[in-house]
Length: 465
Image 1 (cartoon, one colour):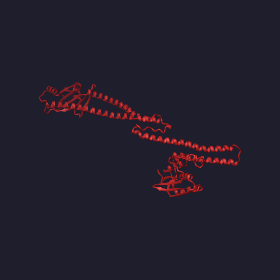
Image 2 (image 1 turned 90 degrees about the vertical axis):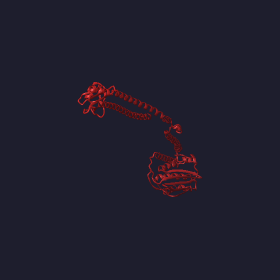
Image 3 (image 1 turned 30 degrees about the vertical axis):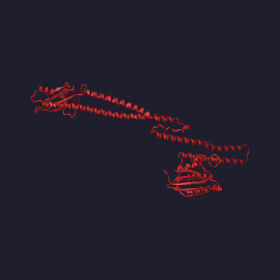
């Protein structure tokens, strides 16, 4: 596979190609203008000579003999062009006047095309001529017009023009190469900040994610890129921190039940015991295994949610009915602690019934766990515009403000020792609830003050695209 062309080379080549096209177009214009100017010069000179011949022929008296007519024509026509040839012949073929190289004059008399609107190009022995031939009236009454042909030797001018054009095209080729090189130098210098930034990015490692790229001195065009990269670094640093903490927490969570099972099993196997002891040990091990199974299931659900592998099966559900079902499920647990469950309001949402039940169950069970005995938990349901709101409010220990933004993180605990040995709680409930709510396009947040804690969930009442 070929390596892609560098950005410097790509811009330089595009600049050089553009410059070459401009120079080529300018060269064509210069060439066309030069040729037109030269042709106009030849036309004016031929027309001028033809006008001199016309005036001379019209001024010769009828009594002038032929020999004398030649002298008068020679005196009247001033030959200023060294390569000019002129032939004047009567209608009967008599040569009245001629000047120039004999072979050229012969061609003018015998082969010149009379009346052509534009001069004719003719070549002889590597020489190039421009010829104009016309019928001109004589000053002799009742005489036939004379045939006048004039040839200009344009060999030197043509060669000079060709040499000029070769020099012009060669100069433009050199200019295109020079512009390409200068463009490469300019682009390389202009992209130096990008090269420096690439070098800095190449040195970024997992241990340096908290060190953003310096924004000072960065060109305006790269500031947005630097800002986006720094935001990405901050997100990566936060993700690495959470992953590190999560790995540590999950290792601790799994180590505790494994150590418990190992210790209990070692104690049971230390001597012979009866069937009741073995059954009790197996029952204890089963509880630990169930806890680990729930934890693995929760972790798998979160992993799928993070990678958008969980698709909600949406249907219209009545939140009031779902809360009543949860109250029936937790009635026994709440009654055992003399906790009263109360709900008010109603709303409907388009959501996955099982997921919403799981999310509400996680928050409600969390509220029951931390509500003092004999107190009251209130669940309020309402509507605001096109969104439904569920608020679960319970009395109990306040959550410090600095911990509120993180309580939805996986395995995060305000007080790690508070739930030590709790086999019912895996520490992933609120994280799962947050994933479910966000999966439905909703939000969840917590407030804790004056001895009460409130979790508020908002969900769109209609499916969002």
